[in-house]
Structures are given as C-alpha cells and as structure tokens.
Length: 129
Image (cartoon, rainbow, N blue to C red; front, side):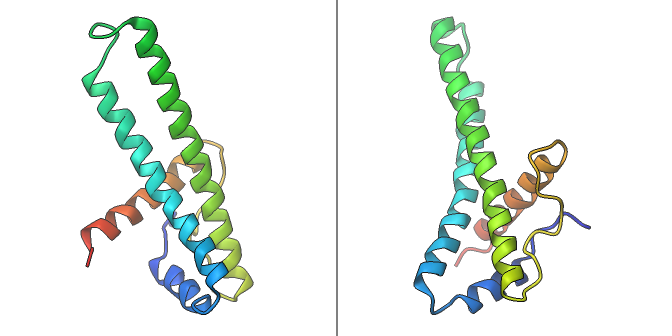
C-alpha cells in the first residue's frame, strides 16, 4: 500500500459513470468535499496567524478558534466518507480503488487520507486548464 490517490482510477470511474447524471453529480459532490476540507484548513491557518487573544477578546478568540476546529474536523470526516464512497463505486464497477490506503478515522490513517486528498487538490490546481 502506497497510500496514494489514483487519478487514473478516478478517471476510469468518471468514464464508467459518464452518461449517468445522478452518479456524476454524486461523484462531483464527493470531489467537492475535498476542496471544502482544503478551504477549512486554509481559513483556520490564516485566522491563527492573524488573530490571538491579544488583539480580540479572549472569549471571542476561543469561540472562533473552536468553531474553526469543528469545521475542519467535520470537513475531514466528510473526505473520509467521500473516499470510502469513491472506492466503493469503483469496486462495484470493476475498477481498482481510488485510494489504496486504509480509510479510517484512526490516527495515523485519517492524516494519510487527508494528505493524499490534498495532494490531489494541489495537482488539480497546478494542472488547471
């Protein structure tokens, strides 16, 4: 297991679902969850760099920080569910799985899935048309 995200297998899944708009929408929603996670990480990171309990009330800072952590965790759990769903869809169609590592909420697996998903998001951005 290399804990990698297979763009080739994802493309095969997309081609297998090409004329099934309901399935294509489902795949699109799963892939959109990847960007939601990326955005949650980015927003939390920027917030933590800009603000502290010193430049706003301690209570306001803690509340916002907690909200952002909950959002990031929720988005992280959503990508785990999305990767499981994509793997299941691929398997059902005789296609090798999209992510070949362990998909679990347990450490270190949840981080490995996240790293693979973020690498995929980065590849999309770097290879944009």
